[in-house]
Image: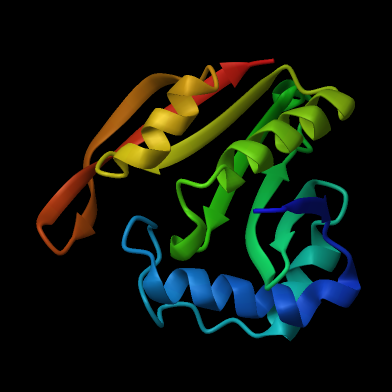
Length: 165
């Protein structure tokens, strides 16, 4: 699989909105469930315009189009500077094929370039594939919010993970 990773640009807004909708409609391992987000390309555009100084998004693409993304949020408050909060999502059909690893590595490069010393993320405890990926890349579990997420089996824990870069 030939994957390219590039920064989100405003011209990508509608393709990005479709990617998010596709991922969220099939992914049981995310906090958001199918059809919960009523977000159009215009909503995404407005949010990105408002947060353009504090958030960076990278998109992964293959020959068929967009397949995943990673976003880093950099706090604007002085006491939290040096931290970055990461969110990542990859289409179900592309999971386990190196897309997440590539996105995570590029996100770390971006975080270093922006002066971050630490990256944080949250992951649902049952998302074993993601937890293994993060641990393999050097992230450690720093905390657990017990039974914080309702799923089809009842409740699951939310793991807080971080890595110093």
